[in-house]
View 1: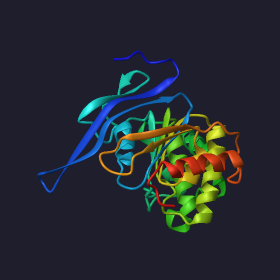
View 2: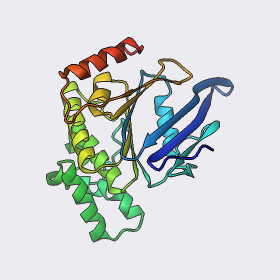
View 3: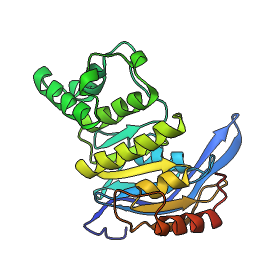
Length: 257
């Protein structure tokens, strides 16, 4: 194995994955993907639907096992899910019968953290995502954006080294989605961690990412290009440098905006 640089948090080496459909049909989803993710980097994996980007994220999360290749976190092999990786899905994944506070404190509770301590942790992250006044509410009383903020707070409450977000704003309307992009950038700035964020939206990728990994728009998924987004934060969608990079990505991708 190639020695890992001290600032490399995650290393994916030559990952391939094939799914079997209808009992016999082989569908290659990812082929020979290699990727390094640095400490505290906000990495965006960009690509259209059905290009393997979510499968790549699930392999890093330990929810899927690659057929070939390996994933390491701090040079230790990833062999399954773990509290060192927090996952936020596109669907809200909240427990309908639990309050917002109970949803957020669930991870620490399962780890055996005492009640007073885990509630302090949960309240800290509810404050971070701007939902302190909603801790007694139930999911059905929240908007889509608020539900997703609860999901982000719940992931942070486990104190993961890595945050993995799989198209978390895909179900939101355009205005709420832009608000959540601003909130995600703010939260990351306050609580620096390594983030891998999957999206099919170029503007979202440019607003959030330190680096964008573009995947080819067909299976099996391969990395087509990488872009360093060396622009100051908070970003402005009308910034000329950002717009030039946007035009370049559009020229090199099969995404439909």
